[in-house]
Length: 164
Image (cartoon, rainbow, N blue to C red; front, side, top):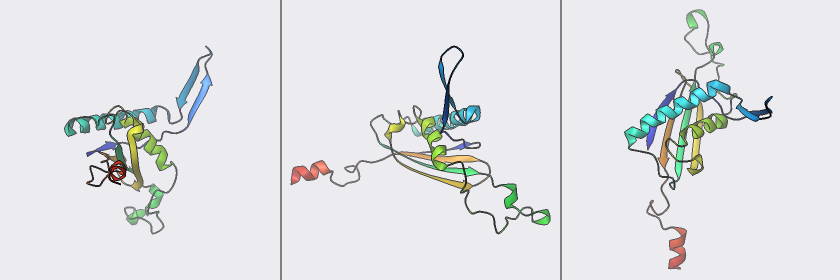
């Protein structure tokens, strides 16, 4: 398993905008713009350091699992005022159940890890992601090779068919 933390405000990857330049070339831009690309590069850099510590990249044929917890600071309005400025209001939400969507955060991370921890994000066969409150803003990321049924000590469907 490869585990690491990417610090900074998580950015989404989702919508793109395409247009024709004055020279007739089609240009596609990421809706998150430069901050999204900068955060993606930060995730890739943190993954590269973790990869070196773990001993290398995952082979292109291996299935991959990914778990990410995205942390974002609470809004100032979640806290009291005056002498209660450090206390959460009883009405403060337990989770950041607002936009941006967790799947768009996850898309940015999966793309950032492609070519760094695994060859292509098509290798990812299982994912889980969470949004939580936390300071500093960051993403805690775990990546692992998903064992095959045979590696789990169980018989594969092919083995079952041959024994029938």
